[in-house]
Length: 79
Length: 127
Image 1 (cartoon, one colour):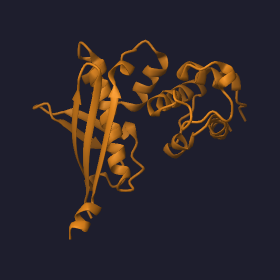
Image 2: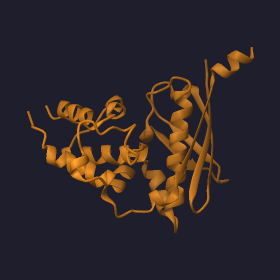
Image 3: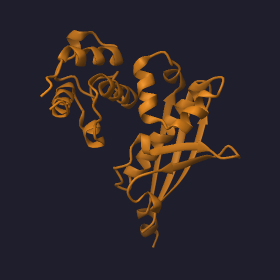
Image 4: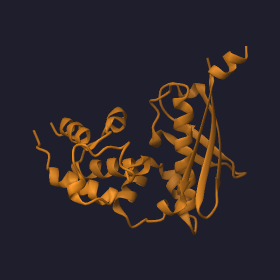
């Protein structure tokens, strides 16, 4: 099992959403974060796939509605 | 009778800011383009002196198609499976891949100014 490097994950969120790292918490959510729209979501997914060498199923891409959920889904692919 | 006709038709629309498609040096934007646009789409858009309005219009088109399909409860077709290429008259033609795609007919209209890109889509699903 490959463990998740959470710093890498947070860096992607910071880079794509333009937020400081202290704002990247499990509660950070698509429907309440003004910077996190559909275009940024797809940019983030593309970065996650490149960085962690995974390819997400469409249902998982749609289910990534907050940072905590992204972590949970990513861990599933790193098994 | 009318109710049955509308049960087979879906509509979708989207609007995008062109400036968000200008930064071809942003690695997350480039990764997004590679994952969600087809080679034909990228070849077309990147052949233009100003690719951003064309990229924005195509992305708006894909969003509009997804919304129109969703209104018919068709939710398994995602951005890379939707290809938007202009025909010889400049009219955008949509080709989708995926289960049941041969029974889906799509009309799409795109428009853009220097600042905004807009798309409107009508989908009809055969019974």
